[in-house]
Length: 63
Image (cartoon, rainbow, N blue to C red):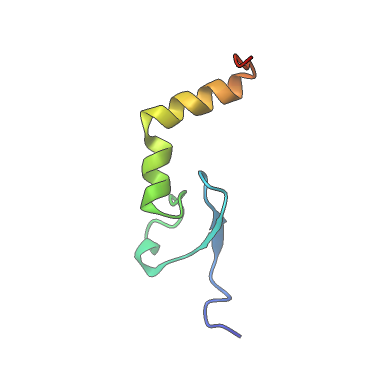
């Protein structure tokens, strides 16, 4: 059995992939939401906020 099989896991709030606990997150594991710096940066970008807001509104302006 792998030594990391018993580590806690979470689902990334942006990409939806599962990720495991890392030692650098020992003190902040409760606040960790994203699997990587890339997901965190992308989720917080203004262009992504606009896209997600229009997708959640339910109205589709495409022909």
